[in-house]
Length: 79
Image (cartoon, rainbow, N blue to C red; front, side, top):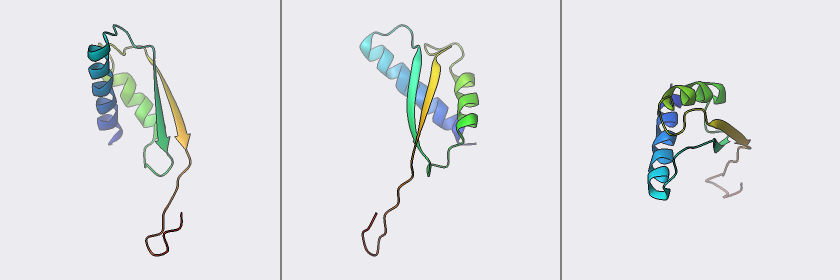
């Protein structure tokens, strides 16, 4: 389940930005996830709730925007 490592990475980014900017609490986190990213959004939500317990982001609302997939052809360079 790579969603756990994604959630942990997101928390690391949040904590780093909070230290740098002097933020004491995070209320919402917005992510864009492409449809071809192979990320299960429900699993990510579950993992996020687990990893933020006891952190600056505990209780933060996780907003996920799923963006459409896009491909590129190596042979003809068309997208």
